[in-house]
Image (cartoon, rainbow, N blue to C red):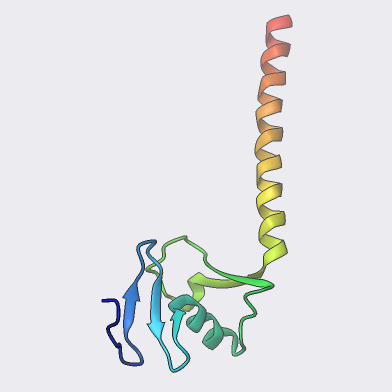
Length: 101
């Protein structure tokens, strides 16, 4: 494997399940290539992230691949954590109200 030369178009699977495609420029993530074809533009990985909607790293259907601003993911994750915490606190509050009734 190491030191082996692969032709352009060759695909390899990393230990984490992501697939890479050999291009003229080097190895690129397969889902990034699909996203660039889908959106007809270059993806700026400094400010954008490419993800699988269903989290299945083998589902390369273009409808399953989305590009989002990195800040959007952080905000969405933070919102989801806060919402879960709110629900947890509401459940605890209901338990306390039932105990005191």
